[in-house]
Amino acid sequence: MKFSPALIALVLAASAGTAAAQATSAGDPEAGKALAEQMCVACHGPDKTLNNETPILAGQTWRYLYLQMKDYKEGRRTNEFMSPLMKDMSRKDMYNLAAYYAGQTYKGQNEKGSSELIDKGRKVAEAALCTMCHLGGFKGQNEVPKVAGQHYSYIVKQLTAFKNKERTNDAGTMTAYMSGVSKEDMEAVASYVATLCAA
Image 1 (cartoon, one colour):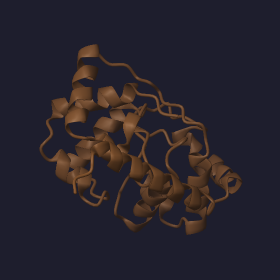
Image 2: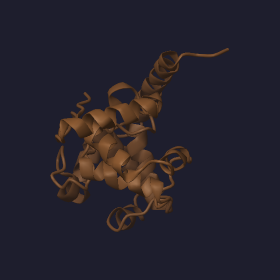
Image 3: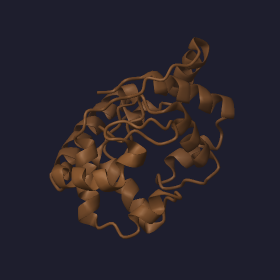
Image 4: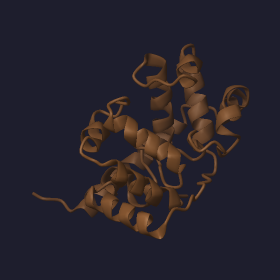
């Protein structure tokens, strides 16, 4: 039996919503806020980053946030700042931080590029069926991140890292797909996605 992409996306969205709700209850947002004020806001800001190579965390999916912190802690993902910070982080603290940021109102930066590049990026994304995992509007689900309105430079940086196999903590999906994507197409997709806004 063959299912339509729309039906598959609908089922994934429903199950992701349930999983996210259950996961969020595991963390204490107030405790996460106190920890974020000590460790995170210098780079990520209180609700939105100003550095275009540092990701916006507010409103990100709980499970994605938790898994990225866990991967930094366990060495599956590396970063000169995040890896040392996560080294001694407890699971409870990671739960709390994830609950805090996931509960914030998302504020995408809505960066603009040329209309031609944005249109090309939309076509590339549609052809690649990106929304099968990232959902419509690139709003994310479960362990798949929300990338709508994310910083253009950060998106390009991460796509490049997947392409070059410098980042592989995605169960192989992005790594496999990005191997055949050109630099120009990556920049076009990033330009398109950066203009989107997701609640």
